[in-house]
Image 1 (cartoon, rainbow, N blue to C red):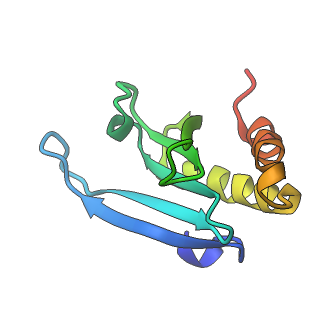
Image 2 (cartoon, rainbow, N blue to C red):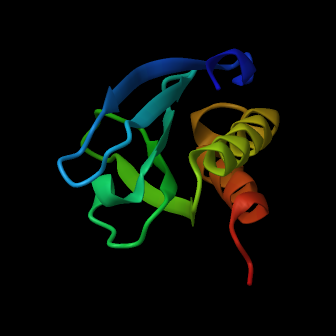
Length: 118
């Protein structure tokens, strides 16, 4: 997904690992918005303590600060699908973000349009 990330986003961290109970390699990535105000993580759901299979898209506002907050946007079965949703989320967020005063609005806008509404 690195080459497909919207231009306002850069890879913050990318790691691959093989859990003890799984034969295949798993991977997680975090992306940071150019403002530094939002981090997006695409990772196996189990990393966040979820007992469901699949990958989760989570976001952290104001990462590294005392007032930071992490929210799960969506969990899906495959890494490819989670990457697609993450790209959509990042594009929507970047299109509506206009500085720290609008972070919550941009976050809500992007989250609402990428969450599973079943």
